[in-house]
Amino acid sequence: MATRRLRAFKRWMRSQGIEYSDALGFTDSPDGEGIAVRALCDLKVGDMVARIPKVACLTMRTSGASDLIEAAGLGGSLGLAAVLMYEKSLGEDSPWAGYLQLLPPQECLPLLWTLDDLDSLLRGTELYKTVKEDKALIYEDWKDSILPLLDSPPFNLDPKCFGIEQYFAAKSLITSRSFEIDEYHGSGMVPLADLFNHKTGAEDVHITSLYSHSDSESDTDTNKSDVFVDTDDYEKLIQDSYSDREGSNTTLVAKNTRRGSDLDFSSVSRDDTPVLEMIMVKDVEVGAEVRFCSYSGSCFPNHFLASVISVVCGCEVFNTYGSLGNAALLHRYGFTEPNNPFDIVNIDMELLLQWSSSSFSGRYSRTRLALWRKLGYCGCVSQNTEYFEISSDGEPQIELLILLYILLLPEDTYHKLDLTVSTAGNFNGSIGMILSEEGQLRWEKAPEVSKDLLLTKDVCDALLWLADMRESFYGSNSIEDDIEALGNCCIRERKLYHSLVLRISERRILERLRTYAAVGAQSFRTAKRSSVRKKLKKK
Image (cartoon, rainbow, N blue to C red; front, side, top):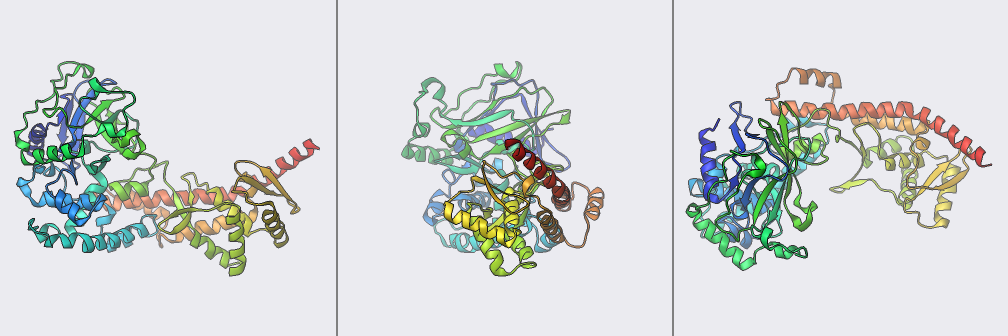
């Protein structure tokens, strides 16, 4: 059903030269879930279902505030947030008014939750510390970079439209909806593309960025710079577009009286305007809901914006943004997925050293950690924090197992290992270390150390301690309490629902880690017996 805001958006798209196939239908959900895009006829591989001129995208280059942003030296998401606030402050006078009226005021990201919500809903999760740090950094960005814009003549910016709440709202929209367009534009808001819902599934359509003349004038040797319009000409094109948006006489795409691959798209009125084209890479049956997901354009040649649409035929079949766990999905997009195979739990180095200090001296822990690093190992590092990942099946990162193994070596065996490493040179983590039960040192050249041979009883006990300590971060409620709360929760209670899904998914990983550790000692004994048999066969 086309609501008033949808009809206004369609009129706006026509005025901007945005073309889309009549095979795509838009519905505005009455329950507040937003816009859904469905296939009104069968779509085939190779069908072009939309063309979006880049000058219709809201970027730091195309906005009327481009001079202000450039003078202030703003870039990236900070500059794009300022641009979005500026255009929203213009109301109906903004060239993007027909698009902006379709957007929600803000997205329900943890970034916008209150501190009380973070404490009660996300404590213990991978997001808790990250979101608190984000909120502090974004406040500093606003104070240092956005507030000074209010004193920038001749724009006469309305302070009510550039407050801290408006800045956080703009950040939530660009975090969940913006795309990396190309080198010239950077990231931006892409009308129509951001209507498609995101879910994990299969790739069905790509968006590529190219000249509208490229089909007839392409050259196999064309380099990246050939893709873009000359900078001076492009600046003039954008200014012309900004000042005279309503003058465009671009026609609509052909009606869907034929199958998708026969659709005939009319040319954009400005033939030399770079465009984004949406091309089907999988067949989609009539009646399917079309869902969208995107990857960073930097992963593709020429920094093209490359994105993916997925389909829902009857029962939903979802798409993916990439390999993102629930913490990343909730952080960036405001939702989670039950049984997400990309979920992880992190064990901070700080927590491991806490375990070590409970049994060993500080000097003991430092020297063993130094040997581990000398072997070329390290954990994951983010924002000056070193940590180890536990995968969704409960399996620890091998660097964690090796560090625990070294920390738990008998003193004489450790000294033999340290001496061997010191005299043999730099191993760069490429040589597998195996110690026999008698403490005799043996080196095996292998790309990875056998995990089973590292799972001694002491290592497994340490893993159980780490799992229990990590579990304690969630507070007094048990995982059974969380599961019961989720069962009594409606998905429309978005904060509670998605935080519970995240908590449960992480705590189940810790349960699997305990199982991994519990059976690890048995795996170690089996692996040792196998190793002894192989050694006897060689003799």
